[in-house]
Amino acid sequence: MAAVFCLVFVIIVLYKGFCGGGEIEQIEWLLCPVCGRKTRIKVCVETVLVNFLLLCPKCNEETLIDVQKQVVSVINKPDTAI
Ligand SMILES: [Zn+2]
Image (cartoon, rainbow, N blue to C red; front, top):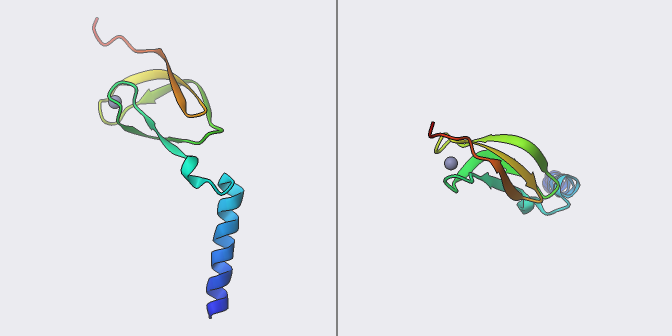
């Protein structure tokens, strides 16, 4: 029985190793450039977003952004004031 648990543990370690190079904590929540709070998007270091329309669930603002190496660049904030 203990061997089964041990095997499961090894599989989990291998799985994490394949998916994130063992550094699963490099995946970060994308922060809203308007209010600075967490959105529902997660990005890892390799994630590249171009002309991504980010909708913030907290302030309901839509922002066009680029993301590279977890750095957010705002392309154009939609003009809320007409
Ligand atoms: Zn926001």
